[in-house]
Image: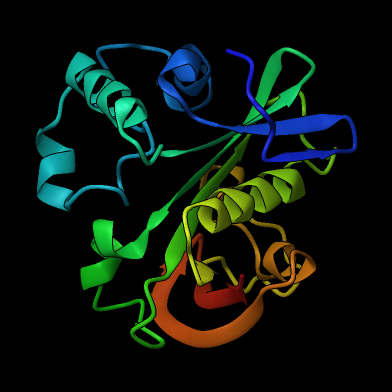
Length: 200
């Protein structure tokens, strides 16, 4: 499973979510109950109808299939050998965001989107979100992305409900060198979402 890390910083490393690391993907985004029809980080990866119809173990099988593709479904952060974080990143053209009526297209560049950042409970407050976002950008750059986008909440420093915090905050993206590119009609946890962009 050895590979060159995308990012190595602050004692953490970030690797692409390859098939060899599928158990770690399961740890980060798989539900506790394998028969559950939630998560697996599919709600913004596939059309809503497909997401509703994909049930239980079929969701795991779908994501396992994604890890076998040339372009992996995201990146994983590690503290030593322990997986501690996940970030989804992919070409926007391959995602429902490409057809979104609430999140605008800024231009016609073949942008990549980073839209879900999750830190494992017990490891929060250690800067892992920042490491994950850098890893997601590095992975996109490795695949020729001219620009990386995110769609975080503009919460102006207010506390964001943890269950909805996966979209990230404007400050997280600003700290990673992203700039405000557009406002959106989308919301999360009661806060407006914005388009943040970083040229590569």
